[in-house]
Amino acid sequence: MKPTLLIVDDDEEIRAQLKWGLSDSYDIVQAADRRTALEKFRLHRPLVIMLDLGLPPNSNGPEEGLAALSEILEESPLTKVVIASGQNERANTLSAIGAGAYDFLPKPVEIEEFKLLLKRCFNVAQLEREFIQYKQQIQGDTFEGMLGTSEPMQAVFDSIRKVANTRASVMILGESGTGKEMAARAIHQRSDRSAGPFVAINCSAIPDNLLESELFGHEKGSFTGAHTQHIGKIEQSQGGTLFLDEIGEVPLQTQVKLLRFLQEGTIERVGGRKTISVDSRILTATNADLKKGMTDGTFREDFYYRLSVVELSLPPLRDRGNDIHLVARALLQRFGAENNKPELSFSKRALFAISNHSWAGNIRELQNRIRRAVIMCEGGTISPTDLELADQNLDRLPVKTLKAAKEDLEREMIEAAMRRNLGKITTTASDLGISRPTLYELLERYGIER
Image (cartoon, rainbow, N blue to C red; front, top):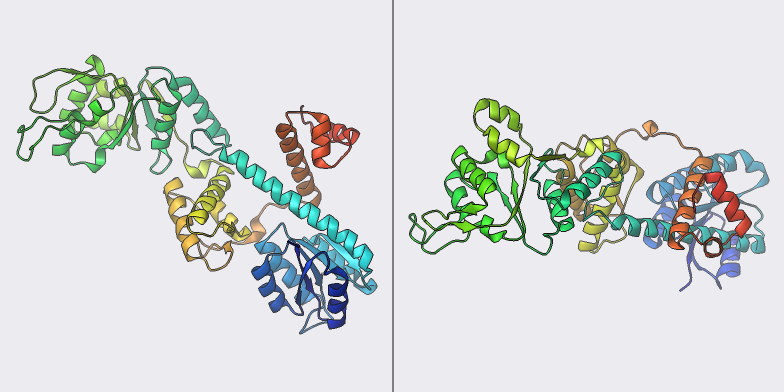
């Protein structure tokens, strides 16, 4: 299948000439004005576009061409746009390059020169896409399902590694929606109990008069409605892990019984007299201030200290830096696949809006907004409106020079290739299409260790 090339020029003769010279290698799509160019771009999503700046209704000025360039790169920053430029249009060409155009082509177009330029453009565009896919694969290799490269999350992962294979009770602290149950599951999966069950119960979701029965079980006839024997969550977690979410909502009477279980490792079902031994590790979580509860008399001090041998604090999403984009893109990939929209991406404005939102509901709120956006968006790009976020001024974005952006990409591609080839210089150089001396020079320039 031939790659698609979009040619945008108001001169029909030039379009016909280029189509005749390039049709053997490319599937040519044409447009004569900005509106048609954007329609064809959104329909075909070409990797490379040739764009004339002088487009109707003002073919003598660059305004329409520059506007088309801006809209294309807003929706697809990796698209390579080549500017077709006459000798008297040098200032406009430089403006276009500064706005993100990949290269320029002098008019009249020399077809063989254009073929060489196109080959380079398509190769670079394909390499960039493969590199992004590779990064996504690396990012998909998460820590027990938890995403995060920020310093606060790396500290959380390190703590989980340390406590996983101990018998210590762990209390997981954090705002609602920060992923406390995922952290508990990670501890379980990393422990020597991973082959056993992981049983979770949200203590705030069960009425006080039923919570004790749900935890400890009950015997048949022990109370009205107890028509059969019921095995409680504690027994169900035999040989594994019991996760008690929202532990601050447990009433005092049930706290006493749970404390006895923690001390003795035995329980009695409601209405029963038989003592049952249960080997289960207890993990708890809360977003409440339990120390205030101890002062108020709603939470037992001895129970608190028994549960919180180790405290693990999960950071809110707003304190996790660039993790928010990492998590957002992973969620978009997931929900896009679920809704048969795998090619969706965020616009620059959407990413900026995501960065500047407070996220009071943390990851849970981010999930809900992205799920809705995937369903409601009509094009291939998620906008701030789709996310129901304020569209903020992009001028506040930090400025990065083209050279700095290029160096960042080059460094990341080299590091990825080195990892992929286990540090072997010859295969890495071949993979990147450069010589060994050049690779050595780049490794030294960027301070990349083998």
